[in-house]
Length: 342
Ligand SMILES: [Zn+2]
Image (cartoon, rainbow, N blue to C red; front, top):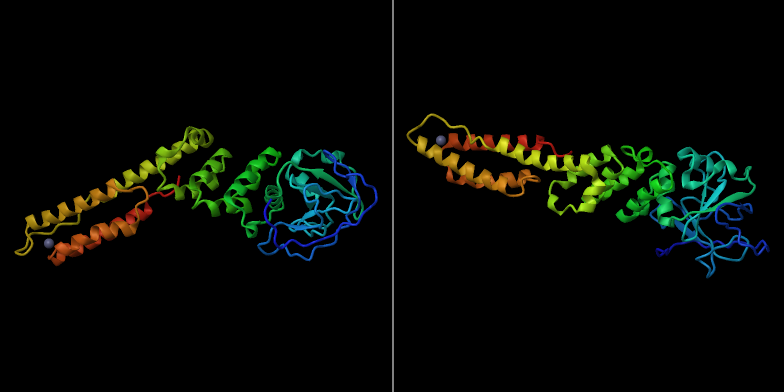
């Protein structure tokens, strides 16, 4: 479990029953005795606050024990017009107070729960408690996703985000429905894409998230395709794998196409003969060939200018210098228009 330095302590009063209220699946729990925590969920804080005691691994309602309660989904959650009527308990014993109607709207069998068989939960009365096999980190991301909320302020790692996406599918919650363009979870994956480009691409491809795979692919221009493993290829699938290879191929071919023509020549003059202009054309060919042979897929306009720029120092004809500058600028403009995504 993570270190929770700013957890807020809450003490759960004893009911005297002595019986653990958490069953394998569901049961009636006492009306929540927890008060609204003072800890705010609007800042980058850990997603739980603490109900004190040494028993942090197996909290039990009804005893003087410890409860770890999600600050994002506290008892007084205001995400709906009615109070939370269901408690989900993560594998690391963090309590999340949620609305069964919201979960059911996400999927009829979200978290493998049979909502129709849950005991009634009129406002202010008992809540059902269900144990979930996911960790609090994963469950926090899933629930934010279902509620349409961003959890970016918790700064989840890429691994946490990736695990949460897999957990959506494992818990019968449709991934494609909750990972539409600009959805909080898609934005999280995109935020990690610069540092985890191929992993993010594998994720997008695995769940056929085309609108996510497209922007992610722009971070793969410098990726060595030969490093794709058999397992990665299997997860990406033939469709998205082909598109990634085509992206690299077409950028190389596009560069070759736009880079070939040398600067315009001009009628010979006493100071700039055809031979002189031939030297410019040769210098252009050599410089641009080095660009093609280098990292052409993710070639930057800065590299183009720095590679071709020195040629100008060898040109004394003002007409040729202008032609070189115009040709370089045209090349830069054309290169920015070459496709950068699948
Ligand atoms: Zn000239």
